[in-house]
Length: 591
Image (tube, rainbow, N blue to C red; front, side, top):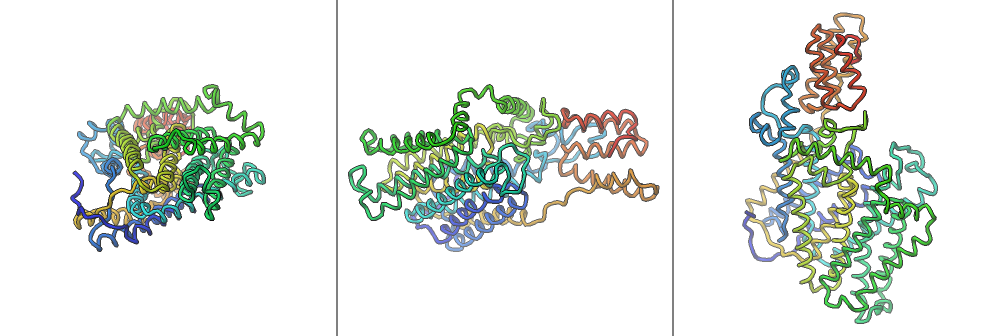
């Protein structure tokens, strides 16, 4: 049941506007440090989001209660609760019942179980990654919920949209210029392991995910400004003294679309086309004059812009687009299909609550059927990854949030009386839909900059529906503030330092002094045990323990631990080699 609320409508407080602009700042600046994928950037974004959310929540709570919107937010709230549940230590009996795959990692039996112990363990097989996911996703979600009241005010929404569109133009323009001047080098001198970096992103697909959202937002903003400035005729707005505003937004749409096409991202092209189709479907559903020329002109104009850009681009772009008809013959298609197939095997091993949010890589390594020593970090599909990490419960909640959100947006836009919001809202909703379609082939929501932009355009899509604002009572408001404060304090805690157990093992192996050797081995074992208590699916730590047991004259135990390490990543040839050496006594195996 939703918390009781005071039914008297309220206005958006200043703290809501502060939350909105904090979200905009994150979305605007985060693309430039490679999409904010580095750990320090993720941590910085998490802290900014949580600090801003806590500040806004505290201000509203002390003024009578948090301002909330009447919108189906419960599925997303429940998804965050699922991540919390995944961190709760469970008795072995309960653990085996609701997450058998996770239970097998935490309670492997034999010598490995003696290392981990038989006590209660969480569902997540990488609790640190789950805590990081919870802090980042929870911070963005709370900040977005607090920002929606400000986005329901027209002038604020237009300014925020204009800033996001300008950011998209800057990223797209830099991407095109950098491709010409620097080729595959980021910022002209940074080589990356990916095959197709673009702009400030290490992948052209992540670049495309960012700019496709701003392109559709630009189109909705342009049409909204044009309709707001014009009269009854289709092109009356061109005679207005404010005609420069929609013209600038149309220019932004063209520039961003050009950058996306130059990137050669097929997923981005599919996302943009899907977003355009969604935009005009929504406009048709909510419009009263959908069959008249005024409603058809924007669609024709957008199609003409894309066709003109395609005609100007070189043959490489045309060949890339034509390859969409033969995706099954592309090199990337077999990779994705095999990842999805193996990922579904991971899902069936722990189908209810998954393996832990953020723990896909460790869960996938146990079931992968190829890829050797390659560590597959993501499923190349948002929905498959959610299915593996949070199980059927999490995936069901996500799909419920999408369906209810789109349905409520359509109903709200149909009832809206503001002409600008009846264009801007569908544009923002189309931007959300474009990234959700792109998510069928990629993992843009796991790129922090793209996740922040997605949250910002979702706020604008909800705000354009003029949701009713009410205040929560003090009790629930304080509970939200307390939850945000807990997340903030958990994030402020320094992350665990990298384990030095492997280095200690190397020093022990090379030490000629017996006493120093024993001390190094003790430190190596303590470090390996501590690492496994944090991440039990780490094969390297299990191999180190196996080597230590072999050196201590326990070959049977060493061989058992090595077999367990291999079971965690059976396709890795280096792990297989080290495990095979353990069967020969292990003394010649490297730590």
